[in-house]
Amino acid sequence: MLDHPKVWTGVYEIHTYHLDANERASVAQMCSFLFDAAGNHAYDLGFAVPELKETNMTWVLSRFKAVFDYYPKWKERIYIQSWPSGNERLFAYRQFLIFNTEKLPIGRASSAWLLIDLKSRRPLRPETLFSRADVIYHDNSYDERPGKLKYQSDSGKGSFEDTRTFEVLYSDLDLNNHVTSVSYIKWILETIPLEKRNTMFLNTLQINYLAEAHYGETLEVSTIDIENGRQLIHSISRQQGINSSPQDENTKARVAIAHTSWKRPVSLPE
Image 1 (tube, rainbow, N blue to C red):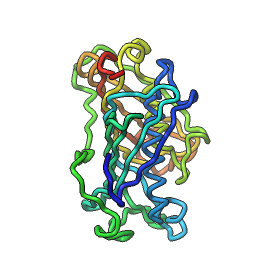
Image 2: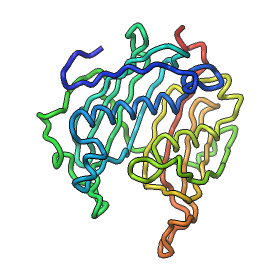
Image 3: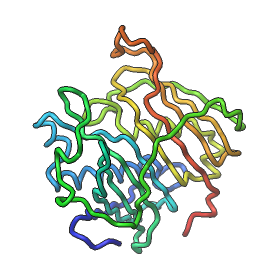
């Protein structure tokens, strides 16, 4: 584990309501832990979303990549370390490391955030909020930054394709009053065949959040298999909803793209 004053460390215990049908912490819950760590560190640094809103700014997650090598069981504890790792153009990057009860590495993640002006709805440069010397910690523990993803539905590969629709409920909303990052991940996983969920585990998740989605809208989630069940591509698109503008030429626009990779559970360390 890293020992540096710019690195935030939190301890999370796995409870029964964190588990999925395989008696492990769910993918969505592991991502929730990571996002919670980011929020807690931002709070300690003085620029969490509630504080930023007072100055008409907020954070929006743009890109996220996570690698999970192990999913903890009930009553196990995990340690999450997180830190701002640099700025590039409009992106503010944040890294994560995950450790098990014995403080051995079991996962890692990287994220790219946008600082948004709430009045103009346009992104601001991260330097508007903080300087590199203030909080950024440059470390090579996991410096793979999440990139731009593509959705290729016409690849012609794969053994299955599934499409489902989901209505945005109040419980899906976050502090910015639009769909929370975890809800997208939950919807994506609902399109995965049950047999796969019971026989394989998600090893890598990459997602690009492209646009906001709001209460009452209907979202269409599609999944295609591009590598015999080991590599999947996912798309989330907006359909006409109560908050859609009549002047919008596209009644159906993509709001997120994700890639996932899957492995056999024998790879899970015990």
